[in-house]
Amino acid sequence: MFHLIDIKDLSVEEIKGLLDTAEDIIANPDKYAEVCKRKKLATLFFEPSTRTRLSFEAAMLELGGSVLGFSEASSSSATKGETVGDTVQVVGCYADIIAMRHPKEGAPMAAALKSPVPIINAGDGGHNHPTQTLTDLLTIRREKGRLDNLTIGLCGDLKFGRTVHSLIMAMSRYENVKFILISPEELKIPDYIRRGVLDKNGIEYVEIDRMEPVMDQLDVLYMTRVQRERFFNEADYQRLKDVYILTRQMLNRAKDDTIVMHPLPRVNEIPVDVDDDPRAKYFTQALNGKYVRMALIMKMLGVKA
Ligand code: CP
Image (cartoon, rainbow, N blue to C red):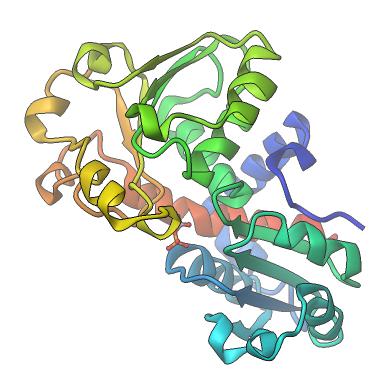
């Protein structure tokens, strides 16, 4: 059975197929309105979410299916000590596919070992977020017209930012993609990404702690939030939380066709007056998440239009 735990579970060809399907859904939504009739998606969210959970649910509803689930661990039997393995064995009796978010790295993988239905990792701790990456790839391809020959700046919390880890894994498979990794020393990318993905595949990258010197080099600027919930102490969070703020003045240094992305939620790293800049694509990105999740649900359920 196919589970999506890590973006590498999908080949480049499969990703292209998903992005092409998402494009067709955008162009012809009526064609897909009933393809998942009588199918059920369970959203098991042990950690808070707005975009991922609701876009999964909207995706299934727009495919004609139904949704069930919970949005916080406290309303599930996890509070009584139930394991994720037992939970998915039970939920698999009620639903055809499960999207799971969990604060512990590896929890969706543990669930997949026991699940009778496909599991989608909707974000596990500071590890991976493969469906955010599909969202990001659709956005980059739609806005830039390509997934190769790009210089991508990743800025902020590169240590705990699971969207960054999955995006580097995905983009490293395309030709001539360079990364500029902008973070303070304490929030640099983990070694398993630096060595295990970038160095291992001979990908060009630089690590830097300031935005200004590199703004004019970027095709994509991917901003991230400093993740308070993953810090071990509040003092470190307070010291680092506002280290990068993309002001309009800062954005003026970028090229006219640079796109600004952010998985959201944002805190202070992008002031709201940047939203009007035509290069700001983060709300379009959130919308794209629904379409690509529709394509993914169809693929994983073996459903065609
Ligand atoms: N981008 C993202 O995962 O947002 P949520 O935490 O709101 O799902």
